[in-house]
Image (cartoon, rainbow, N blue to C red; front, side, top):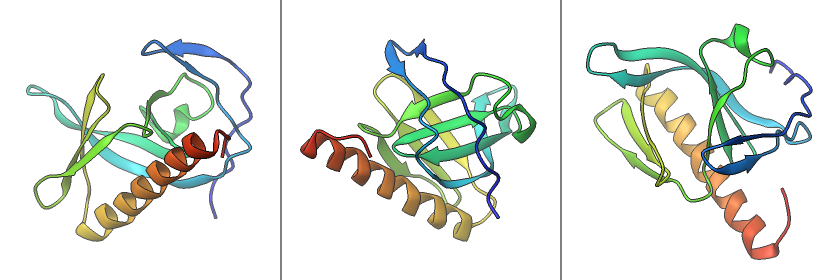
Length: 130
């Protein structure tokens, strides 16, 4: 069973966009993935989740609801599958490089990325929040 997302009502600014956590949206997928940090550190484990059209990530699952997440709106994101277990997510403001443990895990996450983008596009066309 999925871990319920902690209730949050904070509003804060990040990447010059207003980010309002919306706990009414169900978590589509969550889990530990590897995010590229830099040449020295390489890939580091981070806890990721998708809800609505937002990709959030934390240092670890223990930080969920306790620390501010880093986040990326998938609304205008370009998702580029790379090598066998890697993808690049580009939002225009930042690029994330993510590595999966298996091809199956990668396909499951890619499916949720595409659904999140579709939800965002539908919300824009109908001028509603999903």
